Image (tube, rainbow, N blue to C red; front, side):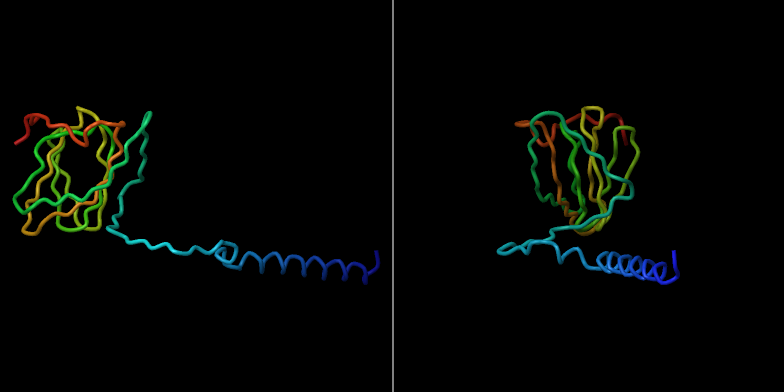
Length: 155
């Protein structure tokens, strides 16, 4: 192959490569369809220190609610029949778990509470400002959001 043809092929390959690279730099929003008439409000944002994995079985009610715990208040010992995701919007929630270990979650943090009678816990507000939680429950269809339980022997 002569040098002219080789140079022509190299130039053509460079041009194709450049075009492909340029397409990769275009923002993907340019390909999206625009929305209209939609508004959204972030109620709370929390970061989980660990990855989140949630699984449900069968028909599931998804319920979102705000929970406020006054200073000195507590939820009482209870468990959930489905997992929940919580975001702490304000204050610090102190949870005592079934094994009597204690977890604290402050504003800007999130956590998952697993389901089942063996996962009893009590949430308390030991601070001076209200604890505000945004909670998403994933419970079997028709089940209660929480079930009262006895203290498993924790102080």
